Length: 400
Image (cartoon, rainbow, N blue to C red; front, side):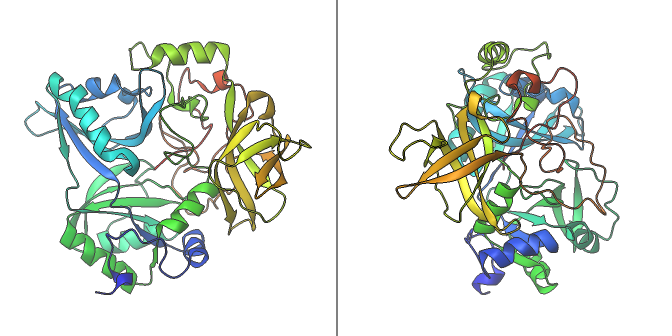
């Protein structure tokens, strides 16, 4: 097999970043995301045990459902982002199973950490993927392509729903999740079947897409990337992920006290969306300046992600700025190669997909509302208003 027909090498691009980006926006693309971690938790108290490590009420999802959430440290900072799939009670009725898909940046460290927290409670933590394949089929044609392979109607499968399917004869765990802002599915298969499915999809006209396009797609959808928008020093409230924090839940979880104090007092900084007025592109860590400030002045914030948007044909960015500078329409500047480039605080997500031929858009608790292309981000609102008191609110983005 040639490079184009073989996954498992996490190529940056195959046929060019812009072409791959537009293929996902207009038709369908397939990504190899086998660098992500996939873990299985098993035990009678699996959900209770994991609940102590995340701020999202896991008991709002049941078998066949999933949610997006974050692992927290004692300071309320984010260890990693993950999707939690409820696989239900197993046949013997003694073992509850959860499937976790965790961000690749900290997979090894977080697996060790989860084992240290959960195994003493009788919960097993196993590598589910091993040498298998995790693929992401994304775009407006994704459902139709998958229905052809599965020979079944998927219109009743909600976002963040999951099930086991036969795809061209191969067994796969399929979840309706997206990190692109389009409808999409993630597919977990063993290695031989994954390679054959990749080949079959490419032969049918699906575009192979690399990690470069995945990054521009997720940025247009204002979805978080660990190590950029999320890290151990950033809380969900600062990151605009207040909809994940269920303080009304009468259960203790790591970092809860910090988030309670932060919710009451308000955050000092917020993640905002920026549109740059020129064509210059900033990089992670570039300084954000007050409007009109000299280029050598003290920064007021920092860029976390920035790219030229193939869909919008303008430069877009995410950045942390003081809460006082987070209001929509605030004029700022970004220091790029010795110049102060004008920027404007705008609504997130930057891009919203067309909603035709899509399943119901009602988000489940902990579900990524940006993946659903629903309401604007909460960057310009008080963080405390984004802490849910009933159901999760569509306030901000997801990670993958």
